[in-house]
Length: 335
Image (cartoon, rainbow, N blue to C red; front, side):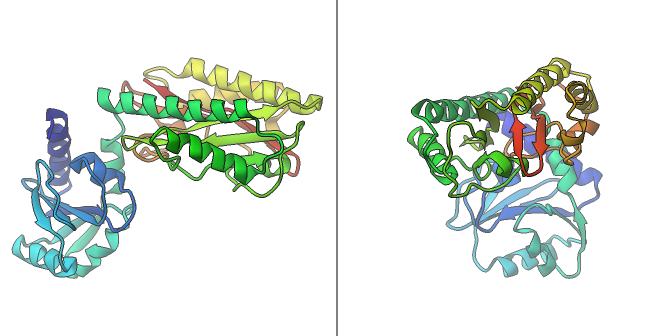
């Protein structure tokens, strides 16, 4: 375990003590869990972490060495957890409510259960140099996949086929395109910001949103672009407006700024172009979100967050005209 990893665990244990928890339960039954990865360096399920103010235990099947933790083979975890809680006299058990292992807390019937999810998110907000490097790499690979797919052409392919090409481009580079499910949406389907690809065959003149992200070394990329080569002046104006809005928000992205400043600068541009009723804000969306081991991170919405050195977040203004089209441009910012 590196010094940085030990520092993470110590910071967590101080928070556990401050919250007057006897123990914190984290882990995963069968999916990637960000906090398990963050503190143990591996998230291969099934795995459970039990952390107290002065000790840390890793239960896994098969047994895995996990520096900084006492490692135990996971067998009949319900009994292992209840025995641990009884031995340690656990009266207040912290739970990561975002984890699919949270249900196990109810095996400890005599303990009071307390959500610790927000504290865990806040502990991961400031990235160290290694994390920033991983995020930069993930974003670079994501862009390479999109650029290569576009250079080969998307016209004549279905939305699903383009999504498949993007997944192949990522896998051929050694990474899954699974920061989230790939988004490839043409025309009116793109007016639904996070819709799913269909069997619609893309034609020249269609407006197409591509929004994808690889996961590299645990960390997520998140990149959106809009392709439009048609002659609809209104749509061309929308594309230009969103590009300008993204640029305006990016210029406000600095240490000490509040996320609402980024939102307001982007909205100002969209309003000036006549898209107030169709802005990302009108659609109930944020101007961006924090990003890291999960594609959406942060204890608060970006608009309510004061930006600090080491933060990573997206900027993704958009225009969504119901029944007609959607436009979005997005990139990751590292402070």
